[in-house]
Image 1 (cartoon, chains in turn red, blue):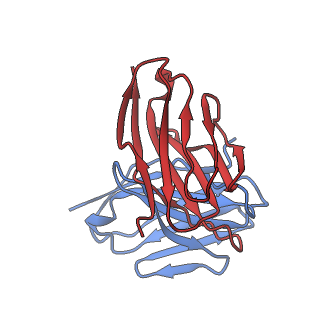
Image 2 (tube, each protein chain N blue to C red):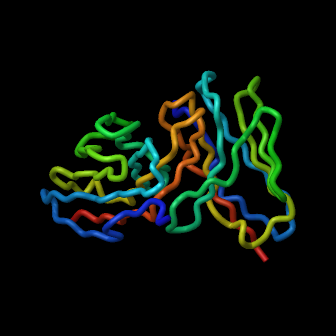
Image 3 (cartoon, rainbow over the protein chains, first blue to last red):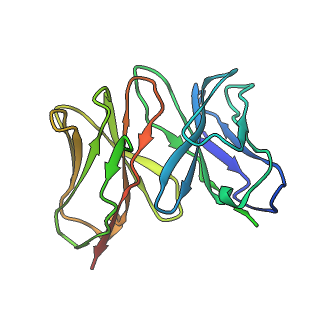
Length: 114
Length: 109
């Protein structure tokens, strides 16, 4: 199993550009989520999904879109990048069964917006 | 007020020391708690779950105090390799996890 994979590992964007951060998992997990991590702010939830076709907003959803057309993939789209979106982005997945919430994280995407 | 709060540290301790972190939570409906470990520039990884009866795994002990709404992590005989940021997490049922900001530990030779 590859676990949770994220691409790209690093990305530099100019203000106003759009892009998609890719996330895939091969563990057949129902629950997937996106976090951003900034110094001193900890992990903040952007969007999450409890299954294919279902998404919901987290704590900081503005400026981001998600979709979940398959169980395996959960891409995060930045619509019009802003310097405030410079961050490390982590995708995570877990099996929603019996309240178990061990989250498996991808290696992260380091995004810089200039 | 954030739902899960931690002392950010850093905690600087010598090798072999015992160190303890606390994490308070504000949502009394929270049912499940976890400690995650995050190394510098890496992703978080589950360290251990926290049960009402306590949970011990080698040098690590996690406790839950529902009356005072806090969880704790005790590390005995600290190793250099324990240096990391420790994140506490709470959740209620299948609601999204809420992470604390993390406590940074540096174990010094």
